[in-house]
Image 1 (cartoon, rainbow, N blue to C red):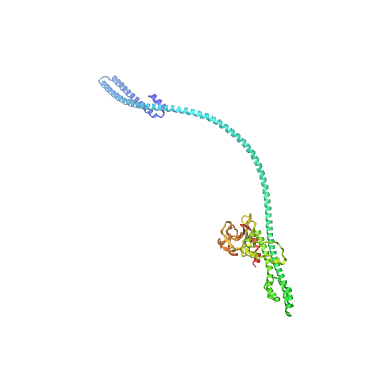
Image 2: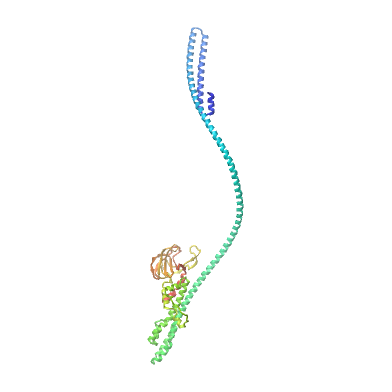
Length: 504
């Protein structure tokens, strides 16, 4: 039993409590047995010693008493030993049952151990096979990595060579960029100088155009005065001959100085109503009536001829299809024939036809030749300029006219309002279509006073001056567009004097 417990403790070291119980039971049984045996032996020795020491009945009684006591003590010890033996037997039976259970557990563990061993063997074989495959895979992977490494090294050498080449190119490009920037700076400087020169030339050209227009106006005025002088000088022989047919009175002597003094006065623009009155002094009423139209016709023809040519040139330079526009106005009709030069007198009378004169007077009513403000200061002109906000060079599509805030803004010609609202950098804007592909735009308004589709006449108020949109202060950005393309508004403003002359 002790061996079984020892073997169980060796296999199952966790059953120490059961082993301790069995051991304690055995120790108690041995101690009780030894106690009873020792007590019995002690009682026997005591009785024997008493009998030897005191013989006789007393000794015999004492011995009997002692024997009875020893027997009782032995019986009690035996019963105790029997109880202890029963307890030990029960403990042994429990130990046997525990041993059987342990044996079954050992058997199960042995079976599990055998299964585990088989599993371990299987896993070992599988591990060996996987190790073999892994070794082969590692060998293949190492070979692949070796080849990839060699390829990467070759690519690295190639990349190094390309990098060196690109570095050289980059250095060259950097040098070229630096040279290009220097050239660009030089070119920009040259461009700025060229733009300044162009602006100066444009200003000089505009000044020359203005002077040319003034000279043409002056020439027209001189031609008108010359025609008036020629007309006034033509009837002089009749005035001188008139006294020969008249009564011998001092009237001819008075009439001659009047006509003679009238000739110098015409050089300073003689009024038209004085002509009939002067002629009436020396001629009958009928010749006087026939003479007045001949005096006015060459002047009107000269003015209209120059105005018509100048308007035609300005419109053509602004991109207007002049022939198509005049065809719509009824100027270009189906006419033709051989060219026969006319004399000087005939050329003055036939300079412009009544149809062209009527078309010219109709045309000037729709041309935006007036200014949108009663008084203003010219700001940025049309064309290339330095932007007032970012300072960069930009293209200005109109002219900026500065005036006090809330100054009334007028339409420069009659037409139909095609737009009235807010438009990005223009702010509040009004656009007017004048026909024949000509339109005007008035931007940065504080408020509009017209609506889309409204037909307005020339010099109609369309809003108030403001600074809405992309603006640095109150002004009107005024544009003239021909077929959608912006043109220089000053070209049309330069026709104001010509149009005024035509209207007069």
